[in-house]
Structure formats: structure tokens, C-alpha cells
Image (cartoon, rainbow, N blue to C red; front, top):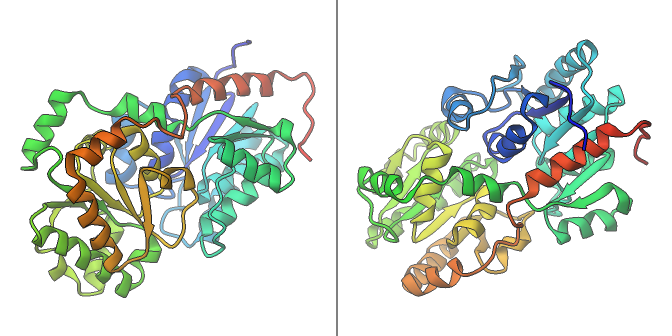
Length: 376
């Protein structure tokens, strides 16, 4: 395996989950990694302290991307990536998942004829209302190496006509991220004490997806259900994304927060620690669907659809905003210690925690080719 030259692998990202999932890959690549942050979701709360907390090198930051609509974000990022790749052409480009940043990175690589590796390829919700579904399908069509997290993801790609030799089942990098970033037991105990919580005695909730926050009725339904759980005697901790907080205020729903324990957004380690000891998690996040399978905790996913059906087998239930949230929560909380022990004994369907190692190997193969042929 040959070593990769300094700054030869451009890693394009723009959101907090991408930072988390690519941390181990960046660490393994060392000086070869050139981190490019589009600023799709950039503020000190959501990305700034994540960089230092995760021990990531200072990225090249793009400007004027965050806060725009989808087309504006993609075009602004693409124009700046075009300039960057012209001045300093990387040997390969890595994108992860399905963000606007990932699509911009993929299109820039394609425009410059640079080999493209897609981490977390082959996820499909089959829900065309999701912008992310369009992003991930487009990236998979032009990627040269597609790192499928699971055999199911690989099957999705093969069904779409992607050539088998372009696909590698690597596992999901989230597994090593959780193992690396979960604080030790003493730190977790101190965090619970600081929040006034008891292990296995509270619900952790997050709400940030537009389908729940931009629809006042959906937002009201979710907050109503969380309030009912709290009123029935189980504390509910709700770290509030700035955008969600603004939507709650705009819809005049601040009163529904009264019975909840509202906090600012959490660092990744703190979030994992609180998820690790929650009796139940209620969220519309994509990443948490994977993380609970490593932490061994039950999850209610508040969404129309999911691109991670593997988690639904044992760890999670998919529901839309409304009474089903409370009904499922009551069932999970009644199972108590027995249900938690059962989940803790199950392996994660997302791999063995060596995905980043496999991806580095694929990158060295990809960039070590004497001749590069664009994918069909």
C-alpha cells in the first residue's frame, strides 16, 4: 500500500453529522487529508466546537453557502470548489452521505475528472419528497467507488444497474465514531448529574427536519406528545437546534416547552453519553438511527420514511407526528430494564467498526492506479 501525498484527498463536507462520521477517516489519512467545509450548516454551536472536540484539522472554509436555498447552496459551493480544484487538484475526492455539500463535492470532482469515492452509498428511502434522496441517487450515479455500509445498500445499487466492481461493502463509519467519542463511565455519570437525570430514567428527544419543523401542525403534534410523556412522570430532555427554536417561536408554540427540559445543542460526546443512558430516544435524525444500534437503546423515528431500514428490525420504530409517538413510548418505557438488556445484547447491523480502515485502503487503490477510467 503506497502512502498518499499531503493534501491529496479532498474531503468535502458541510454538516455536523459528516464531521462526526468522517473523523476517523481523516485521522487515518493524516496529512493526506484536505478537509473542505462548505459551511452548509456552519455556526459555532453546530460545527465550530465540533472541529476542536473531534480533534480535526482546520478546514478550508467556503463562504456564502449557509442560509441559502438548496440550489443556491449547491451552486455557491460548486463554484468555489471549481476554483479550489483548479488551483490544487486532489488525487481523489471523498463525500459522505446525501447533503447539498456532498452533491456539490461530487459534481466538482466529476467536472474535473477527479476520482470520486462516496461513503455511505446506496441508502434509499424511496421517498422523492426528500431532497436528500435526490442527492444520494445523483452522487451514486457519478461516484467511482461506492462504499455501501450494508449488504442491503449494495443490493439497492445493483438493482439500479451500478456495476458490481464499483461497490464495496465497508460497514458504516458511525460505529467507530460512537466507540471513539462515547465518554467514559465516570464522565457520563457526571453529565447525568449535571442535568439532574437518572440512568435509564429519562427520554432524550431531538427535532430538526423540515418536515416536522416547517409544518406548525406537525411541530405541535411532536411537542404535545413529548409533553405528555413528561407529564406522565418521565423527564424529557430536548436539546434545541437553533432553527427548531426559531420555528417554535414563529408558530407561537413556546408554551409547549414548559414541561420539557430544554437545552442548547449538545457536543457529540455529550449527546452520545445522554443517548447511552436514555430509556428511550425520540428523534427525526438519520444518524441516531445508526447510533442507537451501537449504544443498544430503543428509538422512535418521527418521519414519513427512512433510508435505514436495517435499524427498524430491532432498534427503532417509524411513526408520523401524532398519538403513535405516545403509544410507542408508553410501551417502551413499560419494558424498562428487560427491553434495554435485550437491545444491549444485539450486534449493530452497521458493521464491526473498521469501515474507515477499509475506505483508506480503497482510496490508496483508487489513487494508485496508473491509469484512471471514468465510471460508466
